[in-house]
Image (spheres, helix red, strand yellow):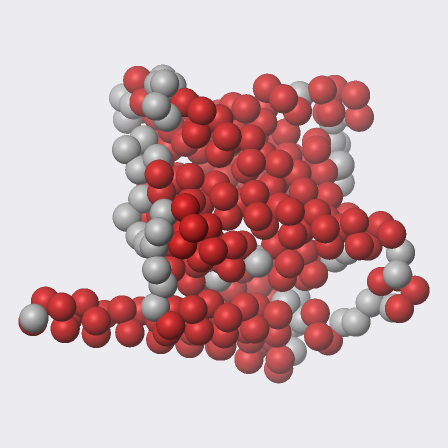
Length: 274
């Protein structure tokens, strides 16, 4: 919608996000939280680099595949979160939560309409298409790594971690809009501003605040809420008609998330009584 290249869109996302987060942090008097320490500085910079790379790969994948296919493949990240959480943080997920993640993934496949819009065989065989698929899978892994790193950096305010991600992206990618040109004034700038201020500054601050308090198993399940809401917004505000399979997929995702939390609630109650 912004009519910009992948790296240009990523730079604007970071730049607008940086502006919004800077105001937020200054208003809350958390400027000192932006200082990097020897114990956490390398993890913050690594998380920032991985997140910017993930954003760029996602936009590049959309250009080579399709939005629905990119969303499905990019949301392999909950699977990566479970694996990384078990290997790095030594967090075990219950069988019910694992089942919920896979059921939610199946619902996401249905909700995006991928099964209703098969790419032509000749198109699927193109090198560009499979490069886009690879971009999604690598980007999903990068984003999952950031999720696990955010759990390790729980002592850092959520807004500070998101600020460093946007700051690094703004500093590294500035050359692309300078070389390729700026988008035309109008709808493109509105879309890019909302991408940076709402989808990045506000959304990632809230997500990191929640990730610091949740296990990787619960995070993996909750990460399916975002694509479900995005699909519903497309239907409600952009006149994107949803087929029966897509509606079924959203229902399946909601059921998977609900059932996962029901099981967690009963176990917590049982522990409390014990």
